Image (cartoon, rainbow, N blue to C red):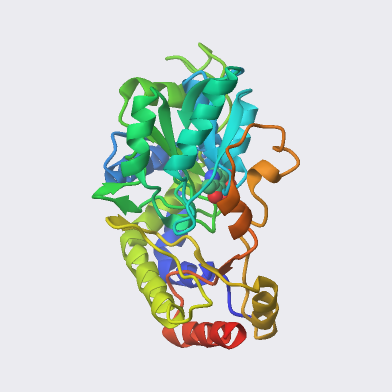
Length: 372
Ligand SMILES: Cc1ncc(COP(=O)(O)O)c(C=O)c1O
């Protein structure tokens, strides 16, 4: 079986320095929020070109912590795409606010600005909720169309929290994700383009006051003194071992983004010729980190079973729009015809920086054979 994401290939490449970094974190004895965490936060902020990176326990908390800092809660509307991983909507509901679902664009899978306008109009018309924030998602590695979204967010006086869990390190018109929005958040889940060996996450902002709040909230609402609790917070700290691993991985991350780009290009060339396959489209001015390589085909079940027979794994992100999931169906939503359609046709192929051309050609040929 071809690996869907070959993390062991990366592990081999990282080699002895990674073992030493882990051993040093263990020997150091400051196992939670130790010195490697502060070092990693500084490197991460520099990489994204943002003033503050605040690490925490996972990408879901990284979103929650920002919503808590903005005091978003009951009676508030937060606009989220319906075609996303559950965490994007979950954190809004957990805050006691209402997610309001927005459709996505078929060519990028990211938030549709026209649908965002429709969702805002819906909330205003109903008059029950107060529009507070938008959480665009940089799905599959590609930044959302911020050039179109930002004017809407500004005009409506909303906050923008960019969920870049799948796309940290991507860029749009020279801005790296993490630095876009009033705040942003990412995940270091192992399968993410920049992942650790467990759970981890980070939030980003250029706002000094917000950064202080994020640091307090991730550590039980701590004040200047450790046992002073000046607000309600949570326990969401990054382990020192994970920071030590991430420091090693960040060193090779720019090259890995290039390698991912080369793999995506090979797929686009190999599969783009068929008019029965829709290959991904990256908007002008954007670079994707290619967390996933997602195509659309008319008969997805057939493709998945044909590829499985040949030892080629595929995954469907996402089979059901979030607003149609049982836990979320009672929240408001704009019409979502695109998400309803693509949930039936999308399928992700193996994608990682170490996918060699020979193996990739096998995948491309198998897809062509099944689809044509
Ligand atoms: C779009 C999106 N948001 C949030 C998350 C949550 O990250 P974590 O799994 O680290 O909590 C994920 C993780 O899969 C994600 O894909």
